[in-house]
Amino acid sequence: MKTVVLLAVTCQLALMAPRNIPHVPDVVFPPVPEDARLSSDQLRVLSETNQDPEVQPGLFQGDMALTNDMYDLWRVGLRWDVAPERKWRNNTVHYVISPLYDTSDYVTIYKAILTLNFLTCIKFVPWDGKAKDFLLIWPIKYPQGCWSYVGRFGGPQILSLQPPNAMSANCLGGEGRSIHELLHALGIFHEQSRADRDQFVDIHPENIISEFRVNFNKESLENTTYSFEYDYESIMHYGQFYFSKGKGQPTITPKKKGVKLGQRTAMSHTDCLKINDLYGCLDKSMYHRRKYYTLCKFMGL
Image 1 (cartoon, rainbow, N blue to C red):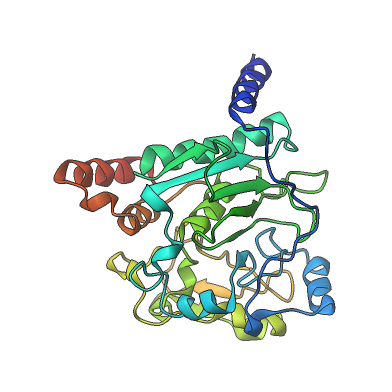
Image 2 (cartoon, rainbow, N blue to C red):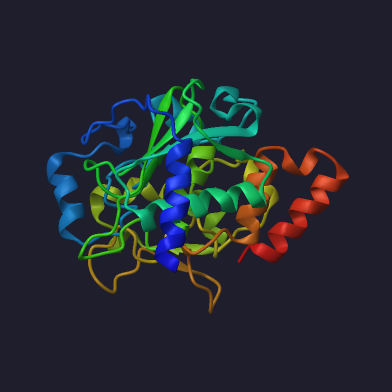
């Protein structure tokens, strides 16, 4: 029965997809800021140390494609008054899910999209073949792993989600990693890069692969998301062993006892409020403010 339902959903979505999808090569070269660019030897280190699929792409902080200009903006957070062109127009994101995904992976991605549509005033809609700006959700072979551009870059914009293989679920063991990358595409950065993070976590540079210590740099104090408390359980937070030299060597640990760093299950209630705040969903009216606060409280972790 489950297989029949999955096939029905996939067929329905396939019928909605336009036929003039741009060609997407197996190998792409997403932008990486000069301070974070890696050599082939450094990239090989990542593949040899069995890193998380968000670390494997070797982009800025692992999974974020950024130009040098965007890297400069990262230092003050993604602010629409500074970079209005990075916001998706009319709170609408057109998307295409690659036909290369099998049925269950296709549905996993679609469930992540439905989650964001339900919990925010942002609307992900299937690309109509006409919109200039849209997401191409695709299983890129190089760089493999889970990665995305940050904010709207214009034109067809890749968001890569590596499907499962015999060794790992990779990016599609559940909806969580898809949501993580979709939030990057909307303009959200990693939680542990907040300027105030040292009040909440300890960084252990001695355990970090030396070439990747830049990925633990902090933003400046101007980040607009600081109206919300630091969120250990954020779907955007690094795990305890990201970029670790070896098994059992944590690179980041919480100052508060008994909490787990990061998860890739669902948005936390703070993640939910943060993205709604960033896109003005909380300011539309008192009704909308109450609606999204209530949804985030009861549906977020």
